[in-house]
Length: 352
Image 1: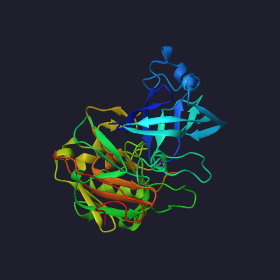
Image 2: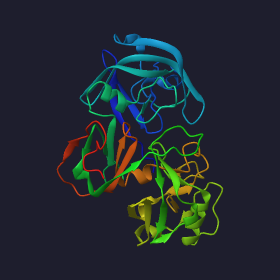
Image 3: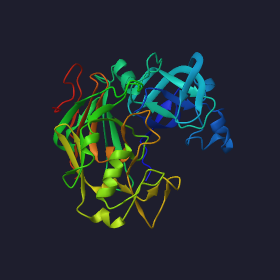
Image 4: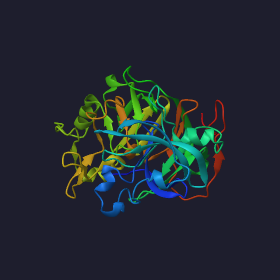
């Protein structure tokens, strides 16, 4: 049930094709070096994220900046050097993109879509596209398609009005606790199961969006309350409760509340056969909640809304105005209706 947002880009001159994974938590963009320790694990570098790593020495446009690239990729620190080089994504070309080049650490080629830490020398891809006048503003929308093999789209500088229904609700970014750096984080004001409030005394809570987290992470007080409503008496050490698979086809609904914006989904859309306790292996006999106790991602916020939530809504992320907009996803197939996101305030068309 791992769902990752990734695409292919090219870097350098002549272009070197890379598969990259998007990251909402942070603005850093980094690539494996062709001679990195990660790539050395693979014969002839052929399987280093599919394409063998980034070779700065063969790019005519690569420009060395410094040797102080370092990032923590949810594990050991990744270190290397900063370069500037040409980056192309789709039909858009950025002539001088700041890239970290990783020489060690097992990690994936990553493109940051979010905010940097104070003093960061990196530039997120949305900001780089706006700086290059490819888009009007460092903003983008994101949605997935229905089905087990998710496809989807990240649309930089635009909104596809055909991909959502009803209101596109705009929420301000909130800071969270004092030790959290800026992120796409909003106030979540409640969670309901079949119209019954779950742990109402626990809310309001800050909730960060993270497309590198498969599940959604909540405080233990919320998960415990949810478990009791589902007749589960004890939460295991993993923080993930086992549920009867019959719930998937039941009429049990969960409602996520963000002030006046409410999003109701069948509980089955937030269930999985992937067990955290068994190292994210698939359990074909049992089902599990996709809402788990937040024990590992507290450095991102009280709540972390992962891909299992992001997959079932339409989202717009606006770095310039510090806003996130959410709408109910439209699942039937209709023609695109793409509108540009403008610059300045109230930049997202149709958002309220």
